[in-house]
Image (cartoon, rainbow, N blue to C red; front, side):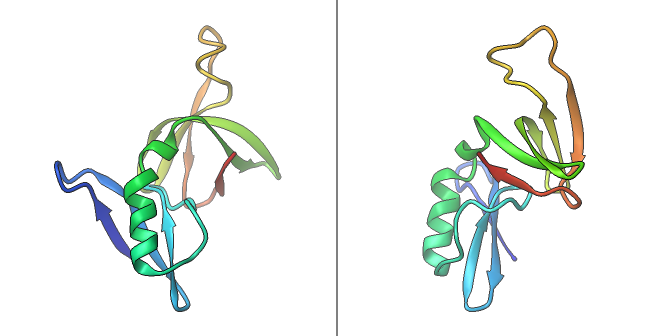
Length: 108
C-alpha cells in the first residue's frame, strides 16, 4: 500500500492498494474511489478527489443492509457518521463511530 499526502501540508489524502497488476485508489479509511487502474492514474484520482469525495452522502453496510450516511470525521481505522443529512436535520442528528476495518463503505 502506498500513502498519498498533499504536498503543501502533508495531509493524508488516501492510499493506493495493489490489486494484481493494478492499483486501487482508496480514501483515508480504505473505501474505493475508483476501479483498479495504473499507478499514475490511481494517484491522480486520489489527489483529485481523495478529500473532496468525503463530502456528501455515502453508504455503509450496517447490520446486513446498506444505509445512507454522511461522514463527520474520518480516520484510517474508524469513521464517525451521521445517520441523516446534516443539512436537512440539524436538531435530531445522531452520530456514531464505526470501525472502518469491519464495515464496508461506498460512495452513494
